[in-house]
Image (cartoon, rainbow, N blue to C red; front, side, top):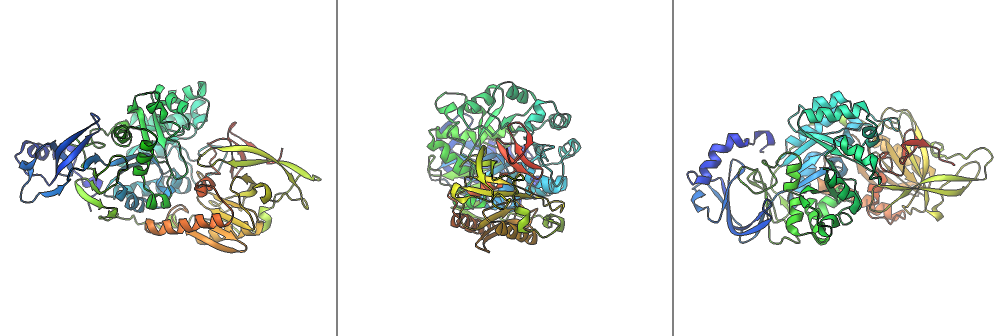
Length: 600
């Protein structure tokens, strides 16, 4: 297994690369007779060969037969397009419910050879040691996985309690690790805007290390607050949802990252900044942000995003730049990867069509890693310790009474604040509903699509449960779904229509050690065990995808009709995206960044 830290650097490989390019020495690999898609000049050059040595591109020319020696591997391109391996500029491995090894195994056949990952999910559960585990497994893989040090755990101080808190000192330490490429998304944008000392110290530590600061500005206000955020140093942002967002970011010198995840469809509404307004595409990057295992196994990864961008009217060569060289340049790696050019890592895809992008042959660091959808290399696993597998602590068995929502004394009706789910988007709506009181309690009302939601504390065993209401899932009958994936604090989210089912789901997750469980009419009908930090499985991606698919079907059996509803479920505690969320401290008004009461 070739690891990233055994790949020779460009200076170490230079003498051999020069000799191969000059025709004085044979290449390790020659790819013959392909169409060279050049993302630097944005052109397609017919009838070219590619010579590879030491895992890097040595030369690209119409005829490199002189580089073929007795031991040279030869691959016939047969007129196919030769494009750079795809890069994901912003993503969270944990959202795939997989460890870095299994995530890599899932996406390599789709042509992804470079990922820039922010493991802030595990940071909330296990702190800096958890980040190091993700970092170390990432470096073991046969493709390039760079790690951004998480910036915000908690994501909004004072509005949630995490398992661990990240400090500026933690950030400074991580900047010395070999696989750290920068600072993860700076979600505490109010803190940056207000000049919070810790947020500025984290940004300063990153900039002193000469690395990239990731952004996250989840507000529609593009006036003074956005200008203040941009002045704070974040170099990119993926939270845009409309054309104006994309334009504002690039005008302020940021890279606009357009995402297509399992549930976030934000490319089509922003790419018109390029296709219609004609903005320079160099400052636009494609990414996924969050993809669950089912999407990875059955639909793809960055190849899926690329195809979508092309379907939205983007020139294929521009779309390719947005998921190769633009991404590499943003992270200061243009001379290392992201293009087929001398000296770069030999990461390459052979494909017969630039519009539909069938991924027929994947090469990473000069060796074939996948062909016709089949993975041909091993993706080594880290030895995850017991401490990473025992992270769900409820403190006690929960009862239906823990999920009882009591009305104010003497009330017959109440006006409740309700979290409104928006299909295919991360934001929620702050709704209100007039609800009846029965025996002093306010129950769910499935006739009006009003389910209960509970946030169960699971890091310290406090036994705390915060209750509220959510609308948009369409659940009916007696059901509940519980998950220890609850961005970003990753307590436990339980949504249901029946308090007994909600208690059963919560207790099941406590016994399981983390994951997702769906209950209906007194029985569990689907389960996805996630033993590592309550977030990930180290089982093969296809197995996890099968369990996840069964979970999605179970949600539908409970009445849910939303596309990728589980992603919406897992984000209901994300207290940095408007308009209203739930945390272990109560309901959070994310337009004001303050706690609010359930009843008006």
